Image 1: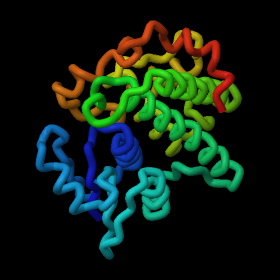
Image 2: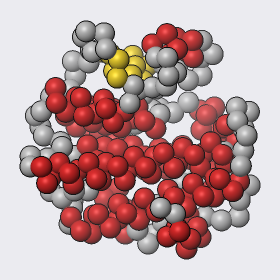
Image 3: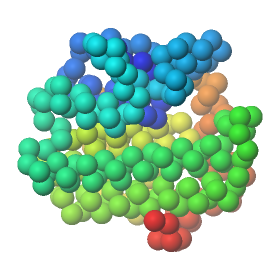
Length: 238
């Protein structure tokens, strides 16, 4: 199999964490260079979507969704189990996966509409950025609640799951790339983040320096509020 990726980017990163946690080493990982103007053309040749990650199976089939890739690999490599042994445990994992994935999606909207990184590619829209920031925080609050209910140390309880990989990739990318850190009041989630970031899988490949220089400081770009401020209205966002 071949995995095409930007190994530091938001959605590919969850695959990288998962592969490390599972100990999967027999996949050929092909990393694109985001700073190379020719990379987009090579990416289009791999995927008509023009996005990564893409997993190409032995028979040539291409899987272009990170969630689909994770579930496919979990079926192919069932040990160690990272989805849950029982139907109830699997449902709990998938529920938490959906929360973490929604957080990543809202972080992406926030960045696309509020960060200078994307200013030359699409219209910036402060109101949309604010809405997405509130929606992002809402999902973080749900993860904090999940940790309280399941009593850790991992998101769904005593076992590491795919949900932890998705959440770690999202929170790490938010902090490292955009300077969006967890609010102090989310104590359970902050403790989980500090716990998980000590794992070998949390060692992230280097980010492009030029990208970081423009991206870092997302909460400050044109706005006078922070995640703690926007949290007061987060309950209004579904």
